[in-house]
Length: 451
Image 1 (cartoon, one colour):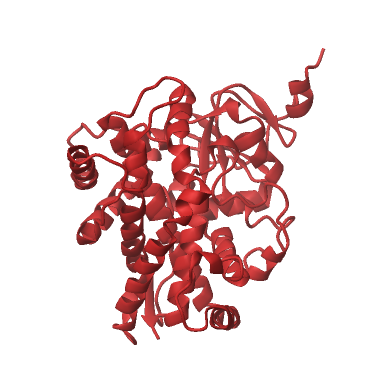
Image 2 (cartoon, rainbow, N blue to C red):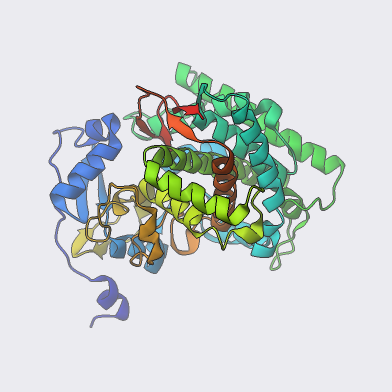
């Protein structure tokens, strides 16, 4: 007799279509060469569920909103984080919220959740605007000069995450941190698709760079924690709350190792992803002069020459839609991987136990059945609510990014602050090449001219 679960997710499907690939490596060479192009090509050719082989491993690209919801929300307990990608992320982030699972993750989430309540993050708005105004001044001082806007956004978001969440401004180490983080993300991504994945302890050239870069980040994070241990107390930031908090069920608090893992996760999720979201949104605006004019008109009408504040955000509706559309086209978390625990059926096809499920916001956000002119930059499309599951730049289900409201508030305030004071143009001949690493980044930066 069929159970409710059987009726909901299905009990029998068929093998999904997909490319044959090479005899030994399957589609591994193609995904190494250009993963975004490979995923989009096969989605267009084979449909909502595509089967790949990567050497001995079987993987499926899940592209329909319904399938993505099944993996991330409705049947999320069947989809774990025992994948190569998460294994390599754990070398960097340890067992933080992004990488942990099960009861430990639930405990850490319970402890961290109050730090992201709306009334808490609203208090960070002034710090965000103050940091953005300082960046605007830096840009104004370099009027008519060409610079890497991705580096500027990384420096800005590093200051914001340091001041608001960690209670420490690491701007003096911004360049060093940026170089180290780029190296770590690149190496972690490369290791994921290597046939032989040697742990960092092996003395290869790649692993030596990995350990050196990790040491840079560890030195910053551990120094903050050690300084805070000497002078404990609530300073109004997330780190204070994490250090003081006790689990309501067990009465336990976090030790230094757990604090390091969560702080490192905040560094990546709160700094890197928002910086890349802002970078690509500024690129989109530079490529769409009419949208840029409409955006500027809203800012002038609403702000009348002053800096934005938290209470202005409901009135800056177009500003929010610009951010949403930037996240649709260039979601920093461009792919979400899950390990399949028990066999499932998605969109009528078998997804076997032990395989990997790829859910890609980058692909789903370009699904022509749910988005008109999917490759076009049209913020006005967000005047209507997207179809359920068709838009998920922060993931979905119980594992949705805990800092999504923080990130949206930050992106909206920063964009309004910068666009009010400067206009950015894409430098003539500047290459726009995507680097789908752990996060989606512009390869070799993004050169723009300040006007």
